[in-house]
Image (cartoon, rainbow, N blue to C red; front, side, top):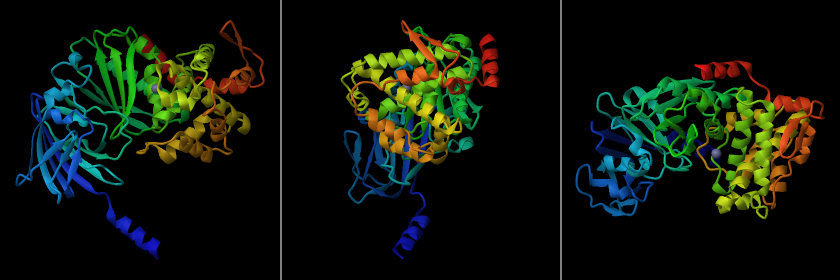
Length: 473
Ligand SMILES: [Zn+2]
């Protein structure tokens, strides 16, 4: 009886929706927000502690309710208010973006962390945001699209791993199709002569790499932001990339502006970042799992996509495992990731990659090739991605085990996660037929698991051919 009552109550509750209207002026100098709350609210906050610096004025919609600011929190009257207006110095917010000097005056990046003052979004609470923009201007946010034609988006609870970008102005926005997803890609407008089509091809190809794990991209509608940098200190084609999970999933890619497509395609970083979306957001002490799986997959996927040959991929994996082994041998993976010491970086990046290989080989061997890390992650995507919550390592691994025929992940976790040193990969590499001499990997023709080894990296010809064509254009 109680259960029935509870079910009825929660079914009729529906989401709690607050309504925001965000207006931006044509010179991208000001941003005005009107916030209408569904129930009286007595406190709202912005995510950045610097947000108050950019707040120019705030008042109630009808009368002055007496609002006090305390750090990043707005203290409203105790009985709450239902409507609020405020103005933000958008031009100054835009300077928080670290590459703002590279952008043309046509567009800015202004994270909502600095301008979105809102109630906490517990449970099914959400905010519907309508953007009012000058003619010819666009906005890009990672939030769920309710109706792009009228710039209406919905923001709900998320891991808030970092500050997501909001892009305003004139920039090249395209919806790029890859298996299982439409990427919402924004290429920022910069003062440099760049080949936009080539950059969108690069995004499409590297996101397609990830679909070579289980046939589709893990998030059906992520935001992608590409920032071309003109005077980068880095000579690498992709200078930096990261994933942000804040109101949705964003992949940010910073690239050298005039780099030819062939070089962009040869850089592993975009494939690495997109691979991160196969996992949910894990708490920081478990980042060795997220980084490790991405390191494993970037090498596997770039080989399946025809960019690497088998020997090169195994060499990269082997070399990574060696770097991991030499990094802070007195620490366990959990301790290394929790400590976040720079000297333990390689342990954090490669311990999880060792476990990924071990799990992959065990799953394939045990099932005669019916199961693999790919297929288990594919099932995980079906049940659980994209995920709004922050996971622990054991939660994630236990869930993967529940999706496999027999557990493999938690046994590896128990053995290695809190054990000093580095997972010993020599046995599995040997069985796969990889011989190492003077740190050089060669592939033996005959080995116990030779077929399994070939299956892991097997090239998918249509993608390899397409990538090959792109590289010669
Ligand atoms: Zn990473």
